[in-house]
Length: 156
Image 1 (tube, helix red, strand yellow):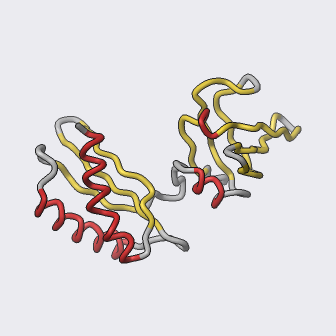
Image 2 (image 1 turned 45 degrees about the vertical axis):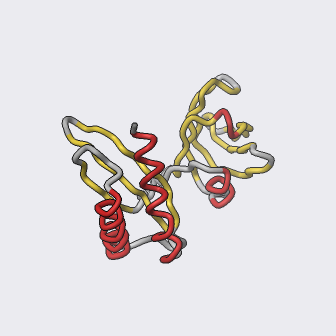
C-alpha cells in the first residue's frame, strides 16, 4: 500500500515541481507510532528555502484533497533533504563527484560494507571512492547496484 501512495503522490507532485524548477529528492510514506507521515524532500541548485517548501506543500495538499488517494489520516511534510542529502540515482552520484560521501553496501567489497570518503568518479555505474585507512589513501570501486544507501557526508 505505501508504494502505491508514493506513486500517486509523485504523479501529483511532478507538475508542481516542474513549474517551479525544483527537483524531487525523495518521498517517504511511513508510520511512526500511530501516525502516518507523507514526507517529500525537494531541492534545487543553490538550495531551497522554507517559503518554497511551504508553497509546494500548499499546492500538493490541494491536489491530494481533490483526488483523495490516501485512505489513512496522515501528516504532510515538505522539506529540504538537508546537508546530508541522500544519493538515490546515478545522476545524484554524477552531480556529487568530488564531495564527501557515505555509502552502505548490500554485500562487502574489499572486506567492507560501509565506506566514507571522496567520490572521485562515477563512470559506467561504478562509484570510485577515495578513503583513508590510518594515514594511507585507498580507492574502492563500487557498482551502483551494490549500494544499499548513500548520502552526502558532512565533515567537520
